[in-house]
Each structure stands twice: as structure tokens, then as C-alpha cells.
Amino acid sequence: MSHHRSAFAGCAIGFALFVCSCRSLAQVGDVTGVHDPSIIQFGGLFYLFSTGRGITGHTSTDLFHWKRADRLMPQSPAWTSDYIPRGGSMWAPDISFTNGEYRLYYAVSAFGKTSSAIGLSVNKTLDASSKDYLWSDRGKVISTPEHNQWNAIDPCAFEDSHGNDWMVLGSCWSGLKLIQLDRATGLMPERSPAPLPVAAYPPGNLIEEGYIRRHGDFYYLWESVDHCCRGVDSTYRILVGRSKDVRGPYIDRDGKPMLRGGGTLVLASYDNVRGPGSCAIIHDDDREFLVHHEYDGSNWGTPTLQIRPLFWDEDGWPVAGEPITRPPTEKPPLIKSMAGSWKIRFNFEPTANMRFQADGTISPGPGTWREHEFRLELTRPRAARGIVDTFNIADDGSFFTGRDQDGSLITGTRVADAPP
Image 1: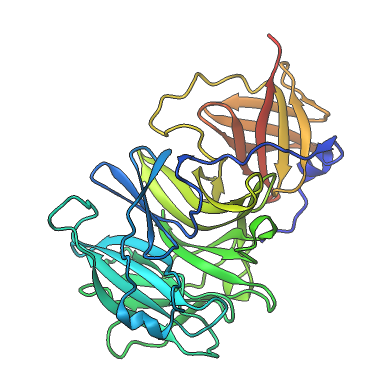
Image 2 (image 1 turned 90 degrees about the vertical axis):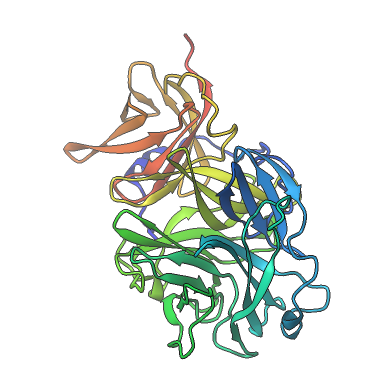
């Protein structure tokens, strides 16, 4: 993760600071209690699955309005009794469609134990009203014994560019691992090689919830680090690295391997968004969205679903926007001029006030601003020349986000428009 202090941030950090007491933004409907979300689209609906007894399900027609569905598996498969405490939950479900069937991977474990396993259930359809709707458990994929050096939980299955199936999994202890799956069954082939390490974090820190997806020429490995499950005291952050080879090595923006604790920051706590983590990506109408949970600081730290537009900077690194406040397919209001008052965050650190004047200057200065085709250009002085940083603007003009040339994440949210 970059530790650079932005020169632009250095100008602004002296501005008046304040703490936002606004409610944490989230989607509408039954979105509380969502932890470790996984998402897929089928038959005009978005299906979201999350940690809970029998695996908790939600559905939405538009990614914004959500309602709770029936539990997928009211009874835990018999084989899981060796790993899951009596009355315990199945964790971190992962949904995918492969080889003509929907595959739901899940983890079973006692909290903080390495005696864990990942299982697989399959279905021909996700439509609960269909005569073909039936979850069939295919059994254990992989397990780890007590006192093992890594933990077989938090599965994420994906396909590489050659049609091979893989799974990234694991957490805590020695980090994230990669295994190859049998495409026909979704299980591990016989005589599989040892799991391949792909990410680790310094001793005393936690790493979990690996997620791999391809974008452009790279495979991107997303991870959640530090502490979850502590309500408002949760310190989860989302980091990312990438590799042209699915097996790695995965490298962050600064060139540091993820096996040596590297990871480029994507999302961290700010305002009432506490401990964001456990992410997935969904496409809708040629746009990408980052799906994750957070602990809502305005609601006693309750795990809550959030969905954000996902942007990619000029160097191919992901940047998350602010949570959506309407269905993505709904036509946004006409974009307002960027002139006005903004609150600015640098790497999710305390917020500063800034004003974009109608004449193109920034107050407090020095610096200038310019908007062009949903891009915001901020020019700041450095030595004898100006440095121009370009940021993505929300389609309704409510925020902008991106990285400056020092690698700092900068997000601005609108406070007030400029007077006419």
C-alpha cells in the first residue's frame, strides 16, 4: 500500500477539518445483517448470498432495492458436523455459474480455528419457483486440520482466460492460497499439488476474503486485511494487486509483492463507513460495481450491504466511488457544475473543506480545476511546473474520485453548489 503523502493533500490538509455525522449510505430494503456478500445475475434478478445459518439469500431487480429470500440450505450437510459448531453458520458463500450449473461454495469452521473446510452445493437454477430448483450438496472440496499453518475458508471460484477453473481461499495465519478445480465437478482433482501461496501479510495482521477477477490483461487479487466482526471498531480494508499470470506473483501499484505484505488501497473506514471488506464485482449495463459489506457506524455497527461504482484509472488500477443512491439504470439528473463547496478525503483520512470557484480557481489555493466529459482535472503547483491529476466524476455530479500522481486516493463529495 502506498504511504506517499500527496502534495495536493499537503496543501489541503491545513483546511478546516470536521467529522461527518451523516448516516452511512446503503441500499434500500432488507440490507442489514449482510456479511461476506457474493452476487450473480440470473433471469432478470440479482441474487446475493451471505453468511448465515443455511446461507442467507437476497434478491433485487435493480441492485438498489433488496428483499430477503428463503435460506438456501436450512440444514447443514451431515459431513460439516466435523467442522462446524452445533447450531453454527456456514460462512462466506461464493456463487458462480460453470459447466451448466450454479455452484455455491461455502466455508464451515469454528471462529478463530484452523479446523475448517470448504464445501460445494449445486443447482440447475436459482429460480426457487422452478421445478428444477434443488440444491444438491457435492461434499467437501478441501479442508485444513487443527493447528494448521493456514485456514481453508473464504472461497472464491473463477475461470481464467483459457477456460480453467481456480479457487482463491484461506485467511489469517500464512495468508491466501490458490488451487485448481476440476471443471466437471467443481471439486479438487485427485493428486492435486499443494495449494499455491499468493498473498501474505506481516505477522500480527490478518488477511482474508481473497477475490480474483480478470480485467484487461491482468488478473486482480482483492483482499480484506486487518479485523472484521468488531462492529464500529472493525478495521477491515480492501487492498488489491495484479498479475498477468493467474498463479502470480501479484504485485501492487508500488511494485511490492502481495506475498510480502503488498497491496494497493481501494477502500477503508471513513465517516460512518466502518471496516469495509469482503468484496465482489458485478456488471450491469456495461458498468462495474463493487459489492461489499461494512459496519454501519450510524446503526450500532450492524453489518450492512453497500454497492459502489467501480472505476479504473489510466494505469489500470481500480478506484471505488461512493455508494449508489438510486438504481444504476435510472437516468441521473443533469450533472451540475463542479463549482461549489466540497469535502475532500485523502486515503480515507480526515476530511478537509475545499471550494471550486466559478472562475476555475481553488480556495484555499493555489490550484485550478476544469471539468471535461465526466473527468475532473485538478492542477497544482510543483516547483516550476504544474501537475495535473484527473479524476472520475459521478454521473450525477455528487462526487469525484481517483488517484493523484503520488498514488493517494482522493475523493470529493459535494457539500453545496456555487451560487448562481
